[in-house]
Image (cartoon, rainbow, N blue to C red; front, side, top):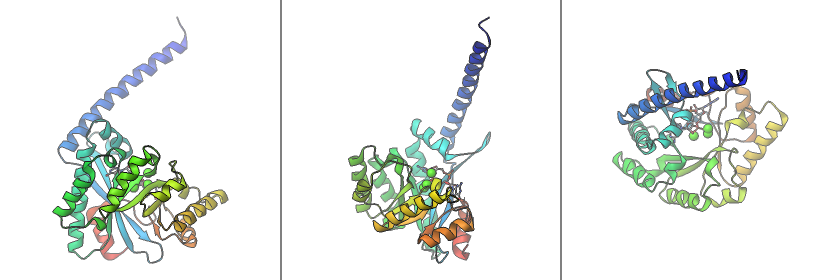
Length: 275
Ligand code: C2E
Ligand code: CA
Ligand code: CA
Ligand code: CA
C-alpha cells in the first residue's frame, strides 16, 4: 500500500543481506587459504626501455578460490587487513618470492625483486625485522629488494611515514612510490623522502591518446628525472605507448605489452631467454 518505492527498498535490503552473507563466506575462505598457506605469487617483469632487458620483477599475490575463481587482490588485500590476516599474508608472499629470488640468484639471474607493502605493514614495527629475517635466511641482501609503497598514503601521517621509509632506506632497501600521481603528496614532501623510484600510475598511461594526457605524462617524467628518481611507467599495453615513453626518456616500463603477471616458472624462462 505504500507504493513501489517501499518494494524497491525491501529488495535493496534483501540484496544487501545476500551480499553480506556471501561476503562472510568469502572471508571465511580467505581466512582458511591464508592459514593453509595456499596463496600463490605471480611475477610481472619491469623492462628497460632501451635494451628490452628485464631489470626487476614485481611479486603480485594471487588467490584462486574454488567457488568464485580468481579473486582480485584489490578485493582481498583490504579484507585481509580488516580480518587481521595481512601480516600473515605478507610474510607468506615474502617467503615465497624471496625463496624464488634465491633460486634465481643460484642460476645467475641478477634481477631485483619488488614487493608491495600496504599501509598497515609499513607502519608495523615488524616489517623491517621480518624482511631482514627472510633475507638473511635466503642469504640475500636488502639491495636485492624494492619496497613499493602506494602514494595514496603519502600525506597521512607524513612524519611517521617518512621515519619508516628512512629506516627502510637506511637498512639498504630500494624504495618505490607506487601509483604515483593518484595521491596527494606535495612535491616538497616527496623531495624530503628517501625515494629511489617513481612508478607512474596506469591512469596516466591510459590517457596518452589525448594531447593533455601526453603533456601530463611528460611533466611527471621530467619532474621525477629532475629530482634524480628512476621512473617506471606502469600499464604499457601497446607499442605506440612504449615508443612515446621511450621518446620522453623513460627508462623502465611495465605492462601487458611486455608481459602480464605470470607464474614463477614462466617468469624464470622470460628472464633467462629474454622477452
Ligand atoms: P599495483 O601494485 O599497482 O599492481 C599493478 C596492477 O596492475 C596489477 O594488478 C597488475 O596485474 C596490473 N597490470 C599490470 N600491467 C597492466 C597493464 O598493462 N594493463 C592493466 N590494465 N593492468 C596491468 P593486480 O595483480 O590485480 O594487483 C592489484 C593491486 O593489489 C596491486 O596494485 C597492489 O596494490 C595490490 N597487491 C598485489 N599483490 C600484493 C601483495 O603481495 N601485497 C600487498 N600489500 N598488495 C598487493
Ligand atoms: Ca606495485
Ligand atoms: Ca601501481
Ligand atoms: Ca594500483
